[in-house]
Image 1 (cartoon, helix red, strand yellow):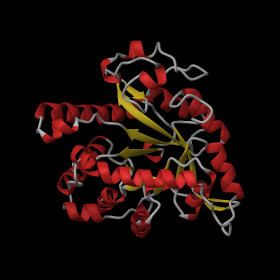
Image 2 (spheres, rainbow, N blue to C red):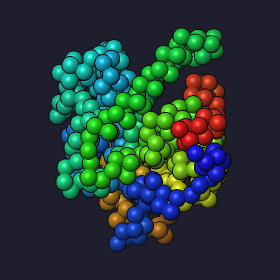
Image 3 (cartoon, rainbow, N blue to C red):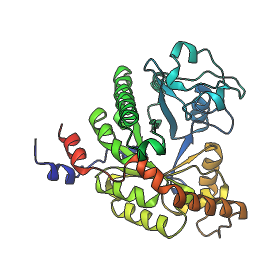
Length: 343
């Protein structure tokens, strides 16, 4: 194997994440429409009806969240508990699949929780080859007190869970055959700096994006060729966010820029104006319509409530930024990344 630095600096003619780039349309170049947990505006989130609904209205991609059951099944759920969506006060990691599959969502139409394999098998349907997926890999987190006290047992449990989850995601992708390779249809979302090497260890050849909300924390991921940025839209508004967008665009040849979760029409138009590659939204139908009607000369006006929400989110990040870094790792360990690329 060649030396690690040239390997990291190597450029490919066709970026592996090119399927996530903005598209040329009859109305101009537009960000791709990515359905947040499926077509969440009209369906229970992260269910097959939500995914199918997103495909039917013309979404380009689907964003979904991954957790593990007690018996090692990769589940599609944003929460690590069953409380909000299914009304059961239990953690997913404490429940076996045979129990989880009997439950139905509180929201109508009442739907079961799907597995990753269910979504993958659906997307092998002829005619759906161009639909891609953003996998938001959720990891367990130690409590802040456990981190401060240096609780090695708690940290080992978290690290083992992360290793199991990435390994089982890779195994599931390998088990489902697609006419178009999954690494041309799957974007792996990584929140934590310390787990970036796991993405590369278990999913080599798959494009990666950093899911995040801190521009300063996200910036370090730009050191790794090909790792894109998927940022909380509210926290891109402002000088630090604008600076990050400029930096990503300088390295644009091998990485995409996505924004989440954009539901207000004026901010959808703002996102188009930022020349990003994709917009993650609860209402993909609405965003597709905005993409058609968008006027680059229109003066954008945002609601007072949305500005208040943006201000609150910026304050929240300032308050909880240190806690986030303590739990997720302060920086990308480039030596581990190099070793993962070489292995």
